[in-house]
Length: 130
Image 1 (cartoon, rainbow, N blue to C red):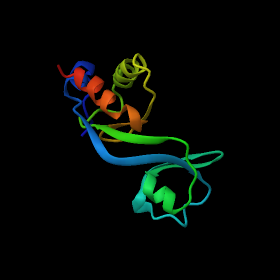
Image 2 (cartoon, helix red, strand yellow):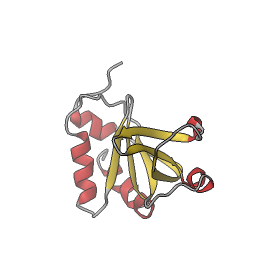
Image 3 (tube, rainbow, N blue to C red):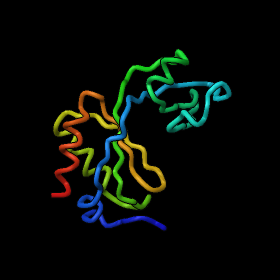
Image 4 (cartoon, helix red, strand yellow):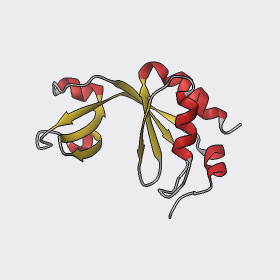
C-alpha cells in the first residue's frame, strides 16, 4: 500500500488528530537504559541520537529538553513520494507564527508544535478540508 500522492486529496482528507500528552525532543548517546516502548521516535545524528518521548518519561529519566510539544497526526495515508503536503501546511502555520517539526513516517505525517499553539494549529489544519 503506497499511500495517496494527489495533493488536493491529501489536503481535503488529512483529518488532523491531536494525540494527548506533552512530548519533548531529547539528545542521548546511549539507548541501552531506555525502554524502547516509551520512545515515539529516534533519529541517529553525528552528535548523538535524538528521541521524541513523553515529557513525563523524560522527567523521570532526568533528560534535558527545551521544547514542550503537542503531537498532531495527519490521519490520511500519505505517500512518501507525495509532493507539497508539508509545504502547504507548514506555510499556513508559518503565516500564523507557528513553528512545526514534521516527521514523515510510512503511513502518516506527524507534526509537533509548541503546546501553546495546539488549538490554533488544529484550527488551521482543519481549514484545508472545508
